[in-house]
Image (cartoon, rainbow, N blue to C red; front, side, top):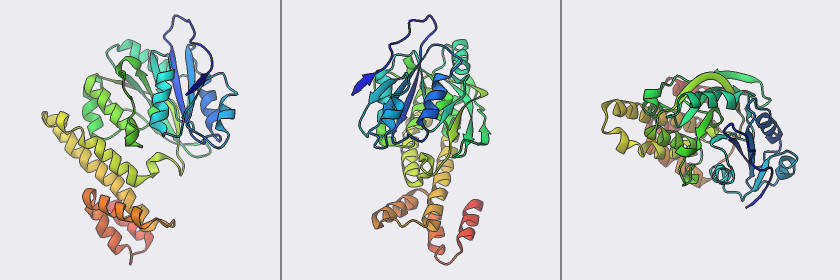
Length: 315
């Protein structure tokens, strides 16, 4: 691992590290870096990890006054963990290379954490944006200090990692993000932190999440498998509380239905051929997690594609 960049600023305000993993992200990484450098909060370091890009991303990144970390292609979790190791901030923000922070993002989250020193993280609202950056919808945050873990059991309402300012002291000395849980590593981290400490939310929009065909949320088989792995790990913590147990049962239904339906639609309507191995894995996953999808796939051979979507929408 090689590192180049500015030293930590010796300013009285706490340092915040904005960590940006990048793999073949040359199209958008400049926007991400510039949004991190344009924060109204003055004491920020920007750490950019190139995850083995082959599209010229490193050359783009190194034009900016950032701490540059060269890694290998280990995935977003491994890149974020490298960024944590290289960073110096008392607080951390994780910004994907195709997303953008709004100028007051750090200031808003940090003020909230300073008002609530027991909190592990502060969560703001975010916009979902189209590929061209135009806003599609705003996502607000309904959480309260006393029931964050219970609400996360029901769904990952945080959704966007860059809407969170983390207090570094709660991340520990180990790997904050688990590389084996691609697509669900952020959800696992939220749940783990919420078991240990409260967290706080506000409804100022602090970041823009760009939705496009390569977004991890579109990979339904992976998301279904890894999210259910994360969720099954909550059972020892949920079973001892009636409130948690209710939320756990609801969450189990929610995740199976959400990604099971997406996977079924992909299998029934995709124009892109998939390998026999991938098809078998998807069928086994649906059989274990969303059996209704198997029925839909069987009848989809004789139904129009728009009718398949309609059936799943009502299921």
